[in-house]
Length: 305
Length: 335
Image (cartoon, rainbow over all chains, first blue to last red; front, side, top):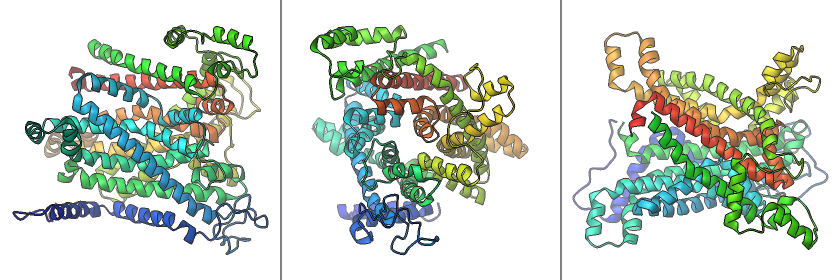
């Protein structure tokens, strides 16, 4: 690379200034990736839509209008400006349902990734830090979870817990958690060899301090990338569970559940099938684009090449 | 090599036991009385309950129950379906070829398209082809395949009327089940139009199931090729004046294929999860649809053993992938 980021540091910098420089460097690499910037923009729009859903949506997402069943989008014959993207089989406004669906997807992504991330970090830290039999036992348990195809295990867990959004999120988080545990463990094991860890230990730092304050902050980069990728998978998998009738239950405007309700109309009303899926695809794509950019910006191995 | 195989096999034992423990506990953590759930009966008298409990072995301590369960598994007894009363293993084996046929077709499509696209994208790095194909790969990777399948049905079955919407073959044809693979059986039967009917039923589900593996394989091939093409020996080969197709075909591609083969092998888990959705959309009578239907019907013996069989299968395929990897890359064996 010809133009280097502003990293030539003066002699002394305050913590805040260092943080600002790190952010600037991060943004420099992130913005090199055009796709990532596009993904970020779409994601920001998505968040805005979810936050301001009740202002943006022209109708109540669950209000049924018996006079307007399966109205096509406005540009088609028979469409009306009152229902820009048409209505579904019971006369609910598609656009409003899609807008409120964004809330579900983002909420699911955040909850699933938070549970999986926190659980995975704690488990991975324990395994990597203590090693020995603790490590063996934990990693064998993780292997067992990873032996099942993720969607199948999530489905069975939901069958145990009972269908519904909360249980679907718990099930998906359990299935994703081993990925975080493995990454954390690998990162912790390589950091444990470093001199600063030994120095901290010699200085009298206790196990908890070593684990969470000394080592963990240096293991975060791969975890952030994995968290982004899991976010998009969580949106996809929860939509799949919704589609199979095991996730969010009707009449909630979750995109996968909307698709399941629309299945019988696929040959009569293309819009009830097309738009929810398109919404899923665009969100997942935007998050994946961002994930690629994050990886480029955070992975020092790729940075040098 | 033998040591490598043995160590890998040994490594699997705890994982397999873990899988059986999960399948075993599954019935016991379900809300409700496990005896009634597994016997599929309702409103039984206390005497009948005790009888069922003894019959299923639920009156023994949990640890003993687990060893009974494990013992039966090792003898090939996976219990009976509550709905059909047939042994779960029999049902599994009769539906399994349908899923294998679908999965094989999907992985063949994914490999035949994914590898060349990845290679070409790497050779022409930064070209419009590279950008276009990698954008397409990212879209494929992000695709909700249950929606993608519905779109294909709308277009090819609804608008064009080219392909049927569901099933494995038209009801007009009937022939003996020789291999379990519709494509081969229809050819063997010699009936006119049977093969093309089977093929037209298979094509859309395979495309849907191939989508995500295709994207993953194309991306992986591209990055593996790029890495290998930066190696010294490739530069040396170029410098010697070797023609580009030989440099790429012999020096680069062969070495780039090692991680790609692993990637292809590891798609089996992805395929199994994808099969659940694909088979549901296309009413494909395979393992995935069977599991979904059993969950919906609360046929818990099927769910329990199906889960176990699928996990064991994925584990064995992953082992085979590992062994192949050791075979082509001797460095792995020594570790």
